[in-house]
Image 1 (cartoon, helix red, strand yellow):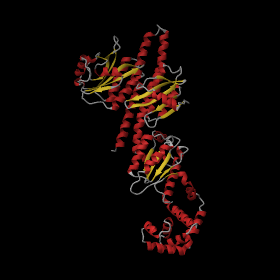
Image 2 (cartoon, helix red, strand yellow):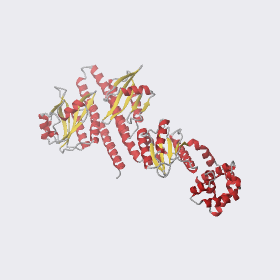
Image 3 (cartoon, helix red, strand yellow):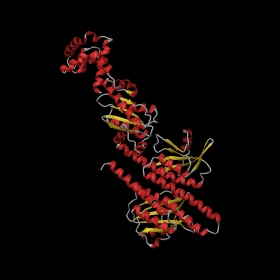
Image 4 (cartoon, helix red, strand yellow):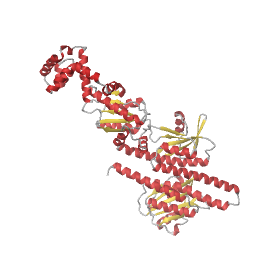
Length: 586
């Protein structure tokens, strides 16, 4: 099994498990009894992580900063019920301090953790070695702690932590939803304004669940960041933009709903970034923005931006904070899938260069991971295909976007449409220096395509120009495909009778002689004209003795007349020889 297969299988397993979390949400939000809901959460978590036990802590009624075991699923003893944890004590205490997931192996023997006797006794009584805890967060505060436990000292992997965190996100909404329902039932008939507030909260939570469910589906399907933004825009009816910083060297600004974020404004917002996924306000000149930073363990991935307006209240801000979690997952998945694409780039590049291309939605998404959108790409084609050149292409596309592949002994690079021309020049300069022992090679830079469906045509034109350059003896040069367009017209127009006449009128006799005698007089004539009529230099070029060249030159004089050696006729004869060579090669 290849490395790519392993990555693909891992991604499919991750998406399958995320789908299970999403499916679990449907059953969670239908439960209105808090105790039944909490039990369902722990059972779902235990099934998803396949661990020995899962338990859930909620704040105690006496002190909201102290959390106690409310329910569990698995092998915990009844004596575990009510065991408390507070800030600074144990795994749960660390989570209460940091707000981030935390786990430890060999809990009881770990000296880096502040231990509390009652909690240690509970873990020892249940023979627990490994403990993972994630927070349930609602309204910017921790409302619960979800623990996963194993008897063996074996850590939970990153996927397990991701799955448990995702479930906790859903669970926090569902728990609060159920609590609101219970509180509403207790308050009905006493305070009408309490009923109104409850319904408002319910509406916010429903909309939040709808947004989160929609975005979860998109992430599972491998959607692009733009598709996630469009879903936020259509569901919440607000314009949004995402300042994408998942690849530091090529940030992109994606906007939907008509929102325009200028580079200057984007720079100020980025400079104000905070390491916290909380909605905040940023002022740039006369404009005020509400922004939420997408922060993960891998660093800052980007910033979600919307103009400040009265509709975006605190509750809607929480929805946006949860939406950023989906954007983060989308970015991480996109990064992983893009890495997988680069390892099988030949297949992807070949599909993009089909004429006409079959642009399925899946192919568009794959291309967009590398910065290639409906505007197409600039094809760069070279006969410099040494391993060092491939390494240059790999480093450049990883940093600047685009794709590369080795096709038909050519290096093909698809450059993103936003790439500045000076950057393309830097790339071609590096590639020219990578020619191997076969001698210097050529690079052809194709034209900017006007749509991805025309990229294949630009690639064909670049390949044709590369062949022209080789046939004309050009080496170690960078050209644009447009520079060779005259030859393309000359050799690919339906009517080429005039070209036939030109060749026959000027070198027809020696071509006929070569055909009859299987000789190479045309090659000798070309070598003499290109080497200033020096028999010695032509002999070296042809790999024969100088006397042989002299004998062939005499025969050329008889066939063409001695004037073939002198200008202007020498220029015309050489042009005819080159054109004939080009036609033969093509």
